[in-house]
Amino acid sequence: MMMNSTKKISMKDIAKELNLSITTVSFVVNGKSDSISPATVKKVKDLIKKRGFNPNSAARMLRTGKSKTIGLIIEDNGNYFFGNIAKIIETEAHKNGYNVFLSSTENNDDTAKALINKMKNSSVDGFIITATQGIKEEIDKLKKENIPFVLLDRLMPEVETNYVILNNYKGGYDLTKHLVDNGYERIGFISIHDGMSQMIDRKKGFLDALRDASKPFPEKAMLEVSFRQSHEEILETIKTYIKNNPELDALFFATNYLGVMGIEAIQQSNLKIPEDIAVVSFDDNDLFRLLTPSITVAAQPIREIATKSIELLLKIIKKEQKQVTMVGEVIEPTVIIRNSSPKKKRA
Image: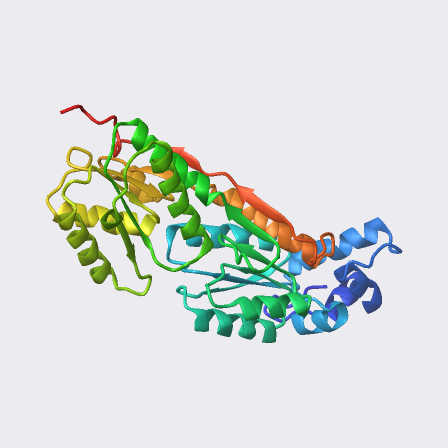
């Protein structure tokens, strides 16, 4: 019997072609095939794959209580780090039979709140969330409603929940120590002023490394820009900062996108890396490997972070891990030494 390939295939069609009952096919589709012979299960699964049959998601949800969809809320899917995180999470979710509902907050509280509510209304089975600063109430609601979720990349210190983050403090400390060990003494720090945990920890690591090395750090050597400033505004702010701090011999950029803009500002200021000023950046970027000179970074193990996030969420969804039992994964960064921060030549 030949089936029309353009027709939408149903369980009834699968059952008819194999001369089986719809109930038998339904049991196989819904993973309730313990009482069915392995040979029959294999025949059903092979034909399902061959015919491209997909059970109706709404009907499946009524039967199982699961939408097989995960809500992924990140800061910016155009960013190197978050874009790659999203790609890996989506791949791993698909391997486990889940689709991903992906959106970006642009670090905006109102956008984050709207996305969480929209995805809840779409009945996602769980969330992976890069939190913005002002969504504590929404996170508390998810906990009270027992909706599975994992915080990614940043903590909300006042909320106990499951999370996968980087050891941002260690990355900040080790990257700064590398500069100090290579003879740099007047190091500037350029970051985002947003009050989130990852930025606070990177800054603390930087300052503690300088303190431990007994290196002075004047207040004017700190620059914190707003996430909401345009590219052009941040570029001009960094250029002004460089002009007003001619004594600096190195710059530490706290994010990769600030690093990219900072390199542009340095070039427009007619300075050379590393001859005039050394550069390091938190988080890697393809551009940093390809530039001449290549840029020293504290790299985040993106695949490990993404994989652990989706694995933890799926354990909670499948009730292998209780949402109320806090599980925290802290991933270690790696300093990759390149050509932008060589040992400083003595004058």
